[in-house]
Amino acid sequence: MEQKEEKHRERKLDIKRGMRTQKMMSFRCDNDVAEILGCVSNKGRLLNDLVKTWWKSRNRHEEDYHPGENNIPLSDE
Image: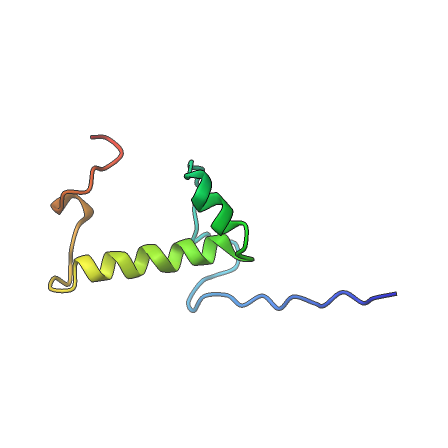
């Protein structure tokens, strides 16, 4: 019988037990993107890293940049 590998949880620095640093979101994606994501074991980590990289590349000249200061439509627009 195979033994299951134990998962090691790593907490973010300075995060207390019970403190949340994530928010559950639900969204639709194109079928071709869903097929690509089907090959990825940690979809959430991939999306988090991609969005952070994209955000930094668009705003590399400004330290304190607010999302409302660009042409990206926000949820209330």
